Length: 373
Image (cartoon, rainbow, N blue to C red; front, top):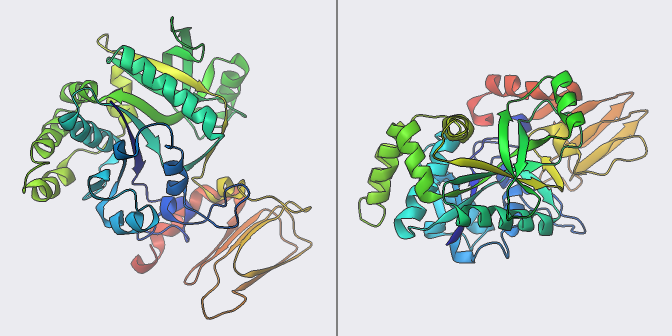
């Protein structure tokens, strides 16, 4: 049967000071869907994309256990076993393995989509069509590992790339054999990738057969396999929570790309396939990326929030104001003669930086007081 699991365990430090340990970026209601005046979170958008893809009872979120109450309040359909609560984040190989172990315990033929919680993907119809094709590929051959390639719009250096191989016979032309994965290239190489037409951005989304993932874990990540097997064995018993809390934090951390996909690309027992996704795809992982969700004014400034913003002779700035419940108009931000700045104000912190230094937010985050993280 088809299952879907949204991975929602990231911390989002590059979106500090809005993203915090208590409410990371995927849970912040700061995205306005087209035509809506009510903000929602990236996780809510991801959950809505599952409509029509798999039945509600087989939709799951893998996240930190400490976020369970927040998620259940925002998404009441996700509760109980539909939230796989990690006692501690152990990177994506263990999140994927967690899902495979639990799904496979109850459904020997479980095929599951691994989805992200920090992207804006439009239109939903194209997304679902591509996902359906991915499911078909794995259902036809459980030893296939399916990834999704986003049609690139520019030579991005912050994404990995998927190189297309031959088309897969008997399927839609969007399905292809993956020739190679390429990690984040420099600008010259990324430009060549785009010009060749043979590469797509690596989306970080996959479709796997649960049994195949457990087999690969046994080969390439035996410690994780052993631990996750013990967790699955205890899942329907009174020992579930204790077993999960004792074992999960000990699992070695690595990404599913390095831990499974990379070695699997050299493993003749499995086949890595890709599906092209020609749609609008935005990884909301930084303030410049978030700025793309806001329409600019005539001077290129993008403004959002409950506070007042005054701009004088200023261009191409991003201003986010938080405001306070006791202040009717919120906090006022005034920029005079500024260009290319990012200003983010919350109740207890303010970030100011040039947009081209956005990646360095992590450095500031490392130095702030623990109660601000």
